[in-house]
Length: 545
Image 1 (cartoon, one colour):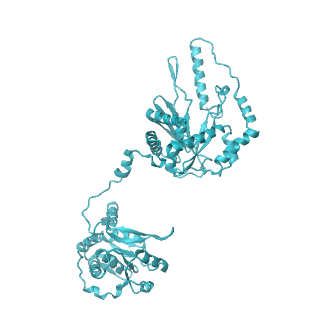
Image 2: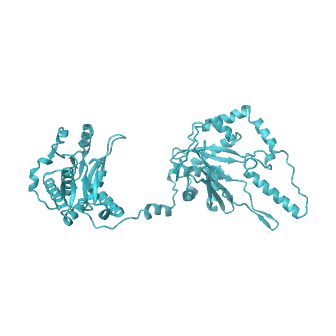
Image 3: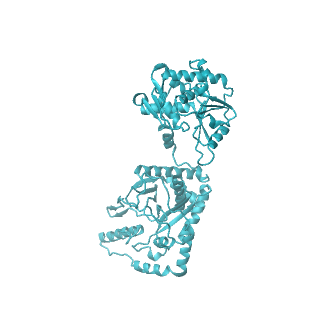
C-alpha cells in the first residue's frame, strides 16, 4: 500500500484485524471488532488546528536552532559519483545481529538511562563518522507519531520524520557520546509534531538536485513489528519484497526478536555496490562487539575492521615480497649491464651518445676522485647540471662513491636554490661552466665538471664500496606550495624495490628498451626514469629542456 494511506504501524493493525475476522468466520462467530472512536480525517483536522500559534512557533524555533547551521551532506565514500539528479533506484540486503550483542547494548543503554534505539544511533554515528571523516552528522528516523491512545488502532499515515543531529567532536567516550545522543533524541521527540516537509520549508537549507535535504541516511528500529500469525492451520508471515527502490542513500532498519535483531539495509544502487554494503554491515557488527566489550573507550579507539579482514587487507593482499639476492646499491644493477652488454648505448643526449662500458668507466673515475677528495662522507653532494650525458656520469659517480646527491635545477629561482643549499648543509657542489655563476655566493667547495681533467688519472674499475640497504641515495625537495619546502630522503632500497616492482609488472627487459626521459632532474620522476632504463640494460634518451 502507498504511504499516502498507511504506514508500518498500520500494517500491524491490518494483519491483526484480518486474523481476528478470519478466525471468527472459521468458527461461525460474529465479527467483533471494536468501533473506532475517531477516524483519520479527525486526526488530520486536529493536526491542522494544533500546529498553529505558539505551538507552531515553539516547534519551528527549536528545529531552526538545532539544524539551521548544519552541513546537510554526509559525504560517504561511494562506488560511483552522484548523478546530477538523485534517483531512488535501490536494493536491500538482510543480515542478523546476535542476541549477545543486542542484550549487551540493551544493558549498556539501561545503565545510562538510554533506550536500545539511542544506543544504536550512537554506534551508527561512529560508523558514519569513520566512513565520512565528519564529526557533525544528521541522520533521519521515522517515528510512529501515535502519541494518543485513540489513534493507535487507526489505519493511515501518521508517521513523521525526525532529523537527529549528533556532535562527535572532541573524541568522547562511547558513554559520553550516548549521553549527547540521548539528550538530542529526547529533545527531538518533544518537538516531533512538526511535519518534515514544513521543517524543510522553514529552514530552507541549500538545495541540490543530487541529494536530499537535511539528511541522506536513515536509521529505523521497529518497535511494533508484524508478528507471524496463525489462522487455524494457515500461517501468515511477512514476505520481504525488493521493490528496486531506496528512499534514502542508505537506510539501516532493525527489528528485535528472541534471537537478536534482523537488520535490513536499503541502499541506493546508483551510489553503492552490494559488496560495499555488506562490508559496511560487517564493520558495524565489529564496532558493536567492541562497544559492548568496552563502552568507556574513546570513539577513535574502536576498531571497525575485524582481525580476519585486517589481516587480509594488510598482509594477504600485500604479500608480494620477492626473495632477491642482496644488491650493493641501485647502481650495481647498472654495473651488471656494463659487464654483460658493454657496447650497447646507455644514454643519448642532444649532442651525442655513450655506451654502457664508457659510462661505467667515467662514473667510476669520478667515484674514485670523490672517495679521495671529499672529506665529509655524511653530507649529500649538490649537483646542478643541464640534462646531458655528464649528468648521468655524475649521478652514478656519486652513488658509486657511497655518497648521496641533492639535485639543484639551475632554472630554479635563486632564493629557492639558496634555501636548499642552506637547509641541506652541503659542502660540495658539482656544476659546469654554464651554471657555475648561479652559485657565485656558494662559499664551500665547488667542482666544475668540464674542467676536471685529472679525472682521467683515476681507476676505471668499480669502487669496492659496501652500500647498506638503508643508505641514502638522494634528497629531493618538495615544491613548498604549502609552506617551506622539505627535503625527502630516498634510500637505495626504495629505488631497488620500485625497480624490481616495475620489472615484475611491465617486463622491462622484454618490452621497454628505449626510454624517453622528459622530467626535470629536480623532479622525483627523474630517479625513476634512469633506474628503469639503465638497470634493465635499456637506452635512456634525454630530452633537452
